[in-house]
Length: 293
Image (cartoon, rainbow, N blue to C red; front, top):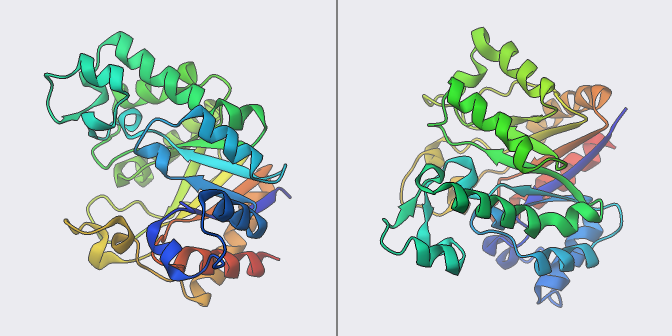
């Protein structure tokens, strides 16, 4: 059976820091990461979705965590077909695009700019990879990323840009997991050695992805987003409010055998709690880890 690692997304989330979960003397980014890594074996980096990672920061992450600690990193928004504010691009790229609109999509960039973004993203995370601490890059595609030949080609091209990185694919559009298409998608991910990200999220919306349990690569992954249906598609609220949901013991208990089944066919499985409001994620991660033990 493969090892199951349990952790959370974003150890720097402001409401987590305010919750009192970190000790009073953990006042710096270094203190908090060291404390977090003493409690959990894996974490997901959320900041890489909003900005291209900095190589020096990644070197510090390596230095501040145990040898067998694992980081997963969310792919930069521009690389997952999300709109990205021009202000978040590196300065030299911003200057080249100074006359463009406020938000950009990847398709708006020229070939050289696309290549530059990919190179910088990969180089920013290279220290984690070199240290053996990078689990996978999580490509969380938006609900408007629909099944089509161009979408399959886009996913195929990920391997060209990240030739030796782990790649995990998370769909936010139910059409990918319709029963008539599900097996084809799973086989596609297996053929490309991509991790299929199992999602637990609110149901009942037009795009809601069902919690289809499957492993398609040596690394299996489940991301727990909670069941806050009221806030799931609400506009004008914080990310923390969107994911404000505390799993109850019976909900976690139902997931334990599913993770163990995944571990039967994977080398390692990551259970990542993304219900990042206050200390909800760390509380649930601790409870789930105890259940699995």
